[in-house]
Length: 165
Image (cartoon, rainbow, N blue to C red; front, side):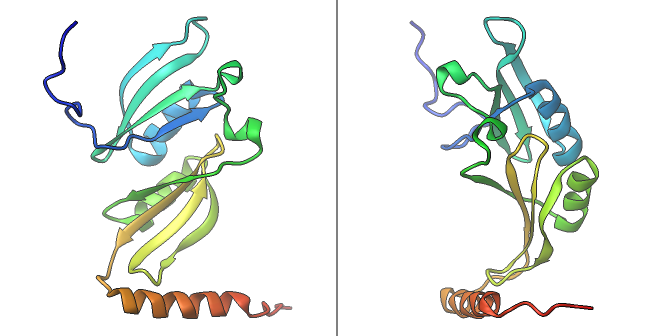
């Protein structure tokens, strides 16, 4: 048995997200168009009909992707009726990157705005049910400044929304 020369393979970080989708081939094309992903590799599942494993590179990070296999416990957000997590992607120009993702078919869940933690941020759900937050860091803030910003943000969220005529 060969021994790996590095405990973390070249190009990987210590954590690698792995997404389960319904329609992995279509998801790969969406991520290429929406997020500029590069396909590193794909491998068919044993039945030859679906993708058992694929690797995509977005920016300097790699994500794994596969078709859902409910019999193995791998279910897509569509099967589950939602997702329990999100991917947070830092980009150089959030406004341009976000619009590209929306133009490719992402559904806006939070428009891009300046946020209390020092990022310009927006969120969308991709056609496969995964939530993506896109962000550009704009300000270095202290923990105290972030806490005060959070307090104001959540206080504002508690206010009744005014109806417009």
